Amino acid sequence: MRLSIERKQERENFKHFITFFSAIVVIIAALISVWLFFPVSISEKTKVTQIEQSKKVATDTKSKKVSQPSVTPVITNLAPDYSIPATTDGMAPVVYRMATDQNIVFLGIDDGAFKDQSVVDIMKQNNIKASLFLTKSIISGNPDFFKQLTAQGSFVEDHTLSHDTNMVTTQDYEQQKAEICGMADYEELHFGRRPTLFRPPGGAYSDTMRMAAAACGMKAVVTWIAKANGGSMQYQVGNGLRAGDVVLMHFRPEFAQDMKAFVDAMNAAGLHTALLEDAL
Image (tube, rainbow, N blue to C red; front, side, top):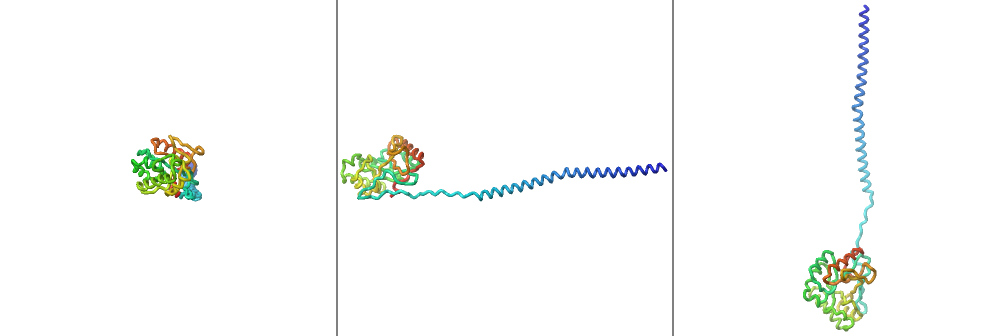
């Protein structure tokens, strides 16, 4: 009888052990489950948050782009704001500088003695257009050379038939008129355009010369206020080019050096060339 009671107690104890053990297993399983799956849940949440933040950044970036002020385009005035004065009392005006608000200078190249292909190339490379004041006695051997320059946008103008630098004092009105009109006729014949600007040889002029020039159809007697000479710049006023200045050069063997000095001076002053012919 006593043995039976002990066995019964053992079975009860075993049941309690099994119940306790099962509870421990359930708890351990629950802990493992939390350990395995809870980090994933956090990771997914973080990923979603990152995506939402990326979308917000993209939206903010778009908003910033839209809200930026628009750029106002710079409007360049391409129309000349300068003009050559009218002929008064039968005398052509004298021009050595033009009133302008544009960053421009005017180049006149004289005589025509140096006729080398390098001249054409240098003018083209530097995008230079100029008034070419030519003399018949100097260019008559090869006037067609200068057609290459007119094809690039330059204009042939009047510098008399013989280049007499003393004509202002040694020639009378009719003689001066013959010099100027004769060259205008020659250039119209060879270049298909009658010149409208006159530069006196040596730069000296008088009222008599101005009347002779006007009688030959010249709109202005053009002198200069700066010149490129001997590979350097020379100024009558100041120590640099100014907007509106008329610059003198010559067709000489040192053409490349003179042109370099002129272009360097233009660049230093922030200028570029324009044509006096545009003012007519």
